[in-house]
Length: 264
Length: 263
Ligand SMILES: Nc1ncnc2c1ncn2[C@@H]1O[C@H](COP(=O)(O)OP(=O)(O)OP(=O)(O)O)[C@@H](O)[C@H]1O
Ligand SMILES: [Mg+2]
Image 1 (tube, rainbow over the protein chains, first blue to last red):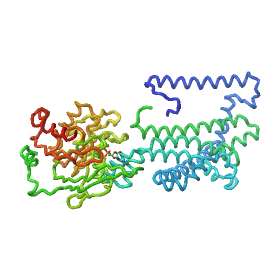
Image 2 (image 1 turned 90 degrees about the horizontal axis):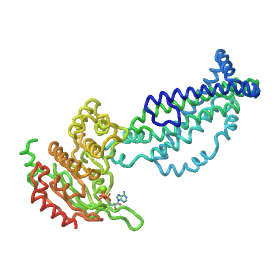
Image 3 (image 1 turned 60 degrees about the horizontal axis):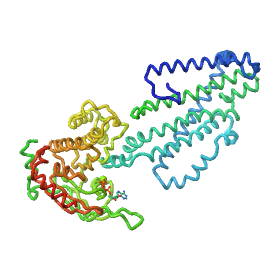
Image 4 (image 1 turned 90 degrees about the vertical axis):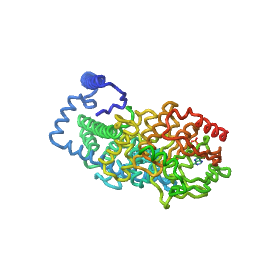
């Protein structure tokens, strides 16, 4: 899984070296953190050393509560992605195919982009409660726009020449969709999905911080109120891993489906 | 196909048993634009018989691509009619001005696209595609991506794709326009060979006099915009044709005739 955004082409041996360097760099960072938190005089309460965070993680992992929170956040993120991507793709395709629909919807689309979802998240929590539903909704909304735009752009970018080819072979609408439009729009669409996946994690946490029963955002709140700083760090790291994991999955899908593109 | 048959086809009597498979009558095309419309084609009429190889020769902008798009039903004419034999739209194989390969499909998958659209089963389709790959001399490149092909190879893939579903009518839009002179001439021989092996009806568009004479039975010269048929030349050069034919006096005479009408 390659999730380095600065990725450039490496021959495989250079790649392996690069990985060791990355591990080394991470290790060094942890050591620096440990040293700073012990010797800098910053209160342990504010900057707990990594070993303390690690032991807090082990405790939380053992009593199982951590995994319940991870599970809740993960479900919200994934459900939000599924709902957001589904609606965005269907609407995006329809808008891309129909100028009239675009005219009708464009004021709403522009407005929906202009509203920061994070700012209306408190409203959504108020309306739809502290449960998972409001978080899924926030995730879906936050995912919706980048995926919608990329679907429209992707479909619009399908060269006319491919439509001509398919029509000269008397292809059906469905065949054109399956054999031209989807594969041609896929690179741009997946770019949108990649952005959406990371945004979805943000959406879930924001929703949970505002008001929730479970989830990593809720865990941060609980730990903060209880002056359990190491636990806050544990939760933050879990969120990082969640976001990286999702990003990595999309990157994997991209790599598999877009083998035909030149090495980037 | 034996050689005697080929010659028969060229010399056959059109009035006896063969009906035209395509009749085009008084075809005109005007594209709407801001100042009264752009007149692309004007009063085009011609007939195509089975196994004809017809070339349209014309300068850039004379409406050649437009004409092929109409024959492929990608565009409606402004006036005039097109009638196919038995009023049935034939199966079409088209080679576009650009090779127009799908970059997400390998050579093999690009070539078998028309068969997929007919829902042919995968294994039969692959066998047929393999035959076409051999016909156009691309063995070993089955699994290459289009980005890894040279321009000439890409055009050969496009030709294979146009032939694979055994179409009744082949429409070729300057298929060799983007190639260098040497590759282009090799492709003429290849196309000529394929055409003789498969006995297709071909309508090809070009702005090369040599190309049209080398390949066609009949050359129709189009005028500069609006495209109008200005000259109809029967190419009575013997077949099969090879490179040498271009240096014969008769070829030279026909070429001069064409050049004079174009100027
Ligand atoms: N869809 C269209 N809408 C408007 N004008 C068009 C359209 N297609 C072609 N034209 C115009 O019609 C004329 C003929 O175009 P066409 O592409 O048929 O020429 P061509 O003979 O194929 O030229 P070339 O040899 O350069 O390919 C051109 O002036 C072109 O601008
Ligand atoms: Mg053209």
